[in-house]
View (cartoon, rainbow, N blue to C red):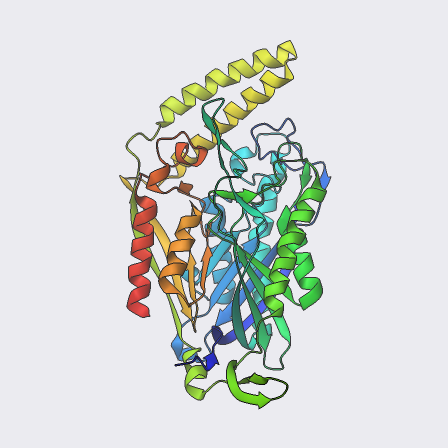
Length: 481
């Protein structure tokens, strides 16, 4: 039998999206890269922003609302995200478990951690983070009175900016974290348009998996990387704010990256922005389906189609509202480095750095600083891990209307989102990583262990955790749909 109706996934709810500037002061500690020779930010490429989306069910009895905050930062310590969630909860009375704080993962924002307070420009970090938490509470209060009945219409497009980034350097016998022309890359670009009752576009959502690592050690400017130009393109043509949600990009990065030229970052952003616009432009009107309307005799017999209103039953099903947090225990790897071992190695590299500085050897100095930074970050990870033999990973799963949303900490490989989308097609699956925490860091697939790949080397969890996550989430979603 011929298909006579094409339905586009939609969610009906109340929604508002607001934004504010969160750019740190010039001169703040900025060094994000081990190979960087600078410590302080020397200027601003583009402002950093916070975009807050408040969504809640049409029927109050269906449950509490959800607040999703996307920050132009790389990572934030567990305590800082907890502080933001609690600050927002106090003024909104929304439970902290319903407040999701995620980061765009730009590596041009600098490492905003109070543990860096003793470094050049680090004295500005504490006051900045205090102000950030207070500002997010204010932003949430701005969003509440703007809530209105809305429809979220979803679409899936593609963009080939993201490339596989585990490069096999055969000559040197190692894997480098960089563009691999022979690797496969998920080019899926999920978008959504939030439309008010009047038909006006209130906001858009872009969910794409690609590390914002265009800018690297040679960049000394505060920057949202490609995310800034992407949002500018989308917002210029659609109106309303664009909420960006970082997908499972553990093994994905821009084809051209690790440079100091901000124009490359803007070019990368425009590529994603125009790809998103192509998909957004093709979305049908909210509250409609595309129906075959029959033949018309012309020079040929033409098959005509029309956008027509959805049935009451379909409209009602799009008001579905389920959100739940599940905890998935992920065992730590048996060969996890100890704090004592890492501390000793760091002290040894500090001594080597002093020698290189005294000798005026810039290449050696850069390498030493990178080695020290690696150990410093390893210590941060080890000290932040939950005690015990396993990491209790909190995963937020939502079903607003026809869609599935999955938000979780850490960095997942592309195969994570590919598996979930394949299992629950044709429902759109919005996958957002680095949410509510960056720990336990990378969670690579079991097949990547043992090859000396960067993400696997620094992973805290054991082989198989990636697959365990997919199965645990899948079982839960299947119980709903």
